[in-house]
Length: 130
Image (tube, rainbow, N blue to C red; front, side, top):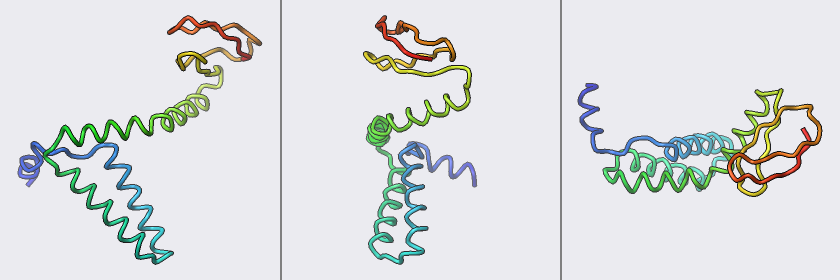
């Protein structure tokens, strides 16, 4: 049975970040719909669900890849924010800043006072308090 499914999925796109996030969105909409009993929410969630299924079994791999890349580019600021927040919470001995010119992440030790930082990427100098 497993081999048949593997053969069936060959040449098909499969699951990516856009599909996963859309599926979670559908689940959230369906849970909300349990309480609201709204027909529009129900139809909207089923339409998204069918789009997820279509994208998963699609043979147009390049088109699905481009869609996923556009989606990842769109949500990149949100993921960067959460990634930075996670770093800040896990590393209590350093502070993280972004270069004002090129937006490169710079890690500085805490407790050094006001220092002049040189960006490793663009060599821009800026002042920060650690």
